[in-house]
Image (tube, rainbow, N blue to C red; front, side, top):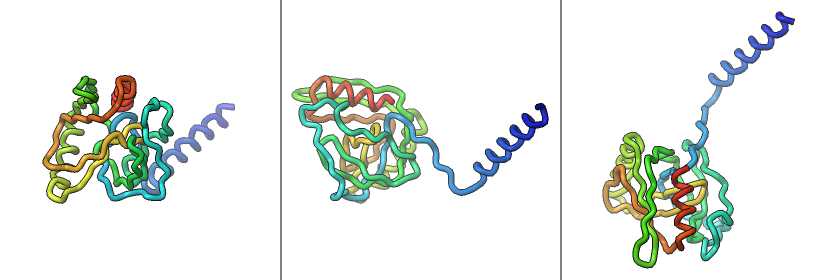
Amino acid sequence: MRRRAALLVGSLVATAALTACGGEETSAPSQGLQVRPVLGAADDLACDALGDRAVADLERPGNAPAEEDVEACALDGVGYRLGEAAVDGGVVSVELRAATDSYLVEIALDDDAAQAMSDLTSDAASSDSQVALVADGVVVSAPMIAGVVGGSLQVSGPWNGSQAEEIAALLRG
């Protein structure tokens, strides 16, 4: 019995070692915020706008691995082709604030995520590019980049209070 157990453990260790050495590994996607460059429109993607529905009622496929390009729907019903995630997680805090006729979500990033965001937006700012803020596989916002953004982000939209709370919760992970 001991010999069988030793063989089984040895086989599992060898299998794990071979799996780790072969091919390109993809990391498990984080929950919460991903920031990805917008590559273009995904015209063939069937997307529904949020409207008056709850965010929970939308199809939310979950975040894709950071190393993969993806297609994703936005809350406003627009489909996007997105590049690899420059920021994958790294959210320190998410605060919800009421603004005039809308809500504002403020996101604070950790140092690594802030540096990645700064790198991404410094490249994008000179070319009128867009980035997408993705949570649970849904594009929350896809702003044009006008300047370098670091460790603090603000996202607003025509959301009602409960929708804004759901969006903040998705960004928290």
